[in-house]
Length: 125
Image (tube, rainbow, N blue to C red; front, side, top):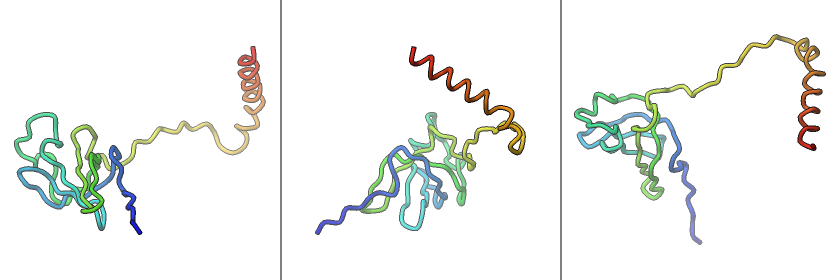
């Protein structure tokens, strides 16, 4: 019986990791209890990288982009050069305040219904 492993990480996805080592050739990142990764120096910036320590420090939690996954060794190749790797909060849309309670619904419901009916009738024409 052959066992097929499904990767926890997908190429192109952006995940969080912790910097566990810095060498001249790249950055080691721990993703979870099993997977570790390497950000090769060529995946840090589009420009020349003189000192990797100018980008990350040991213990930093950063966002990383998955560029390759080896499920047999639980190793992931990572990149930070095309993403906002230091942003720890997901991008959120601002929610406009429109009022509270059901009053706003009561005032606007008939207008919303009429508008939608108009759109539907327009599509039929």
